[in-house]
Structure formats: structure tokens, C-alpha cells
Length: 56
Image 1 (tube, rainbow, N blue to C red):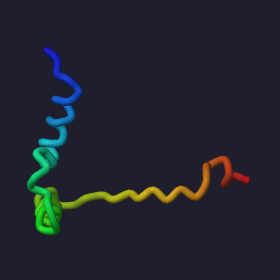
Image 2 (image 1 turned 60 degrees about the vertical axis):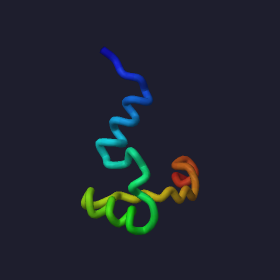
Image 3 (image 1 turned 45 degrees about the vertical axis):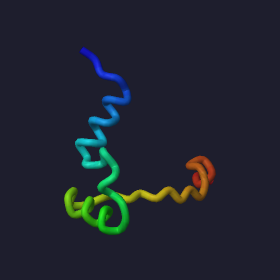
């Protein structure tokens, strides 16, 4: 038995409470999601240079 990539994606999103997405609208939706999951991790990317450039 197998599943498609789309079925796997939807399963993962549903397990995390992100599918269907209509409940996450506006500030109340975002705050409700954070309350439901307990916490979120935000890792912004601010690339200044490559590792090679910083070794000199």
C-alpha cells in the first residue's frame, strides 16, 4: 500500500493543525494556533556570507 506525495503532505499538515488552512485567518487565528500547539520556533535567515568567506 502506498500514498501519494500530496496525501503525505496533507497528512503532515493536518497532524500539525495546519490543514485545512481556513482556521488560521487573522490575528485571532494565529494566536489560536500558537495557543493550541504551545510554542513555535522562528528561524529567520540573515545570510551575511558563506562559511568560506568568514574563515579568512
